[in-house]
Amino acid sequence: MSNQLLDEAELLLLKQWGEARLLEQSMERVRQKYAALFEQVVAAVTEAHPDLDSHKVFVTQFWSKGSVGFGRKAWPDGDTYNLPGFWLHNLRLEVLADEDEPAPAATVWIPPKAFKKIATDAAGVRQQLLVAAADLLTKDEYERHLRQDGGGRALLHFAMPPKREVLNLFKAGDGEGLVEWAVGQFDVMARFLPLMDRILGDPSARG
Image (cartoon, rainbow, N blue to C red):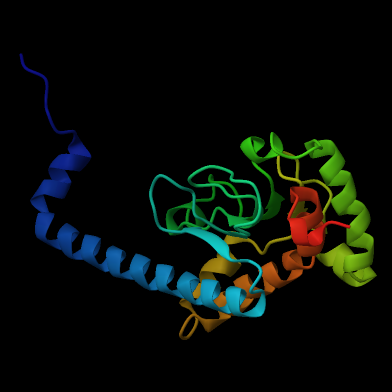
């Protein structure tokens, strides 16, 4: 007796292939609109912080959990997909819609490859950033934005809204609320830019 090539769910999908294709096309249009909002984020962040002249946007690609990040060309290279700098993670729609997936995250990050080119380690950089945070953020901002329980390899973690709130920002109106929120997250992290320049060895920041 031969094995069944298609399982029960796949057989049902095949019976409703036309409807499923329409749904597939609709989902792709939603992804395109979502990605377009993050292009607006890129434009706004680079206008407000022109020194952040390098960026990566992977908010809809299936090989990523959904990330957008900003750094500087003057900083050491990370790798193809992960530059040193300021990042928002776990933003792909499939991740936001699944309660079992990780929550949105905002981090300051230096990948291991870049650390090999600077004269310090992650623990030393993390301590410098934490000390600087007391001056760069007001007491209220420090308590609202900076997370002490981030864990992992990121250097700093910042508070992020829950998944449902991020999705609601996307669904509301023209999506401008999502853009404003994301730009605001990067505005806070960009305050650490001069310190990151010194840490990562930008010649213009030495002295």
